[in-house]
Length: 465
Image (cartoon, rainbow, N blue to C red):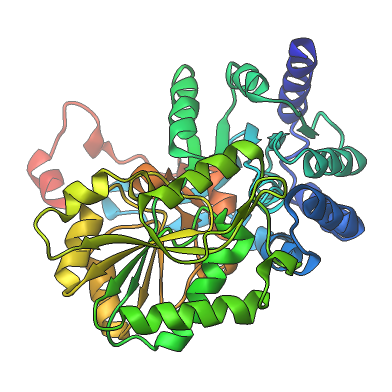
């Protein structure tokens, strides 16, 4: 395996140095080839996601395939304008120079993806790599073996390995890949693994994009439209069975609407998944036994208000509301929260702990006392949501919605602090795989003497600069 990886790395270096990827028409041609491949392989990919995750075709299409298709389409449409040199104004002190910014590909890249959205989170970054003119080695997750094998076959059917290649394996393969020098590493996964990637990249000062996670708060204020909030939150929490990096992780709810929200949330779960969720074709299963036991363990951190059923054989965990008995107006709320794993670890599952508040200032303080999350969700008056967003920090945010900010390819997606580094989607994907190179061109028809030693007429020059 080491020799195979080395051969692919060296072949991609050689191919990039040949200059083949620099031509814009080549890149657009490769994007169109990827576009055709996604259409050709749509059914095998969807079938693979069903087999590994019990993810329905509808959910696979909406949360993975459609997002990739939209991304590719946007890059094909806009690449020529994104790649054009951008002329910038030049101050008079630099006369007769002119300035521009030229986008150039960073070079050979490594893209490591997780298992929860195994198509979207591997192929979407690839779109940016192709668009910018880079080569790419793709490393899918071993926890979804059918999906990874299907992607591997799709990529091999679509591209030469000296341009885009897929390498499968466990963490030992990750370590081997990270021992090589790349021009960019794009990693999606947990903060703990992100630190290992960043540490490995530091050896060569390789730039990294880290799309991580964290505990994304979901706030329901007393002015919220409770029925709408409950439906949108129930959808966001049960999408992929909560195995989403931007899933609402815990619930901060105003005491005045707590009982009403719980009732509406239970109704929404039944409306979305039927009276018996075990029979719903749209309810995803936990990825493996280890994750099942971890998520199941959180049920001991509070009292079950709704849900709580589990089935180890099917890796099924019912959407569960968990009363933590933490009120933010109590002086020991932080201490209580820090003693519960369900409130200190990213849940990545359908368990939903409840914290109660009376005043929005308590919410702001609680959020700011913790690591910056990947997402923040607020339900209530738009002006109040805007104020909370202003006073806190997160990778992205929604007011009166969940999840949907990732669906807009026209806005950047990424984390901040512990939840990530860098962003992508749309033009940001093109930029993150590019180096923005400043170029100054100076005419030779005149050569003003003021900048040269011995700096004659310095008093005049000082006024100009």
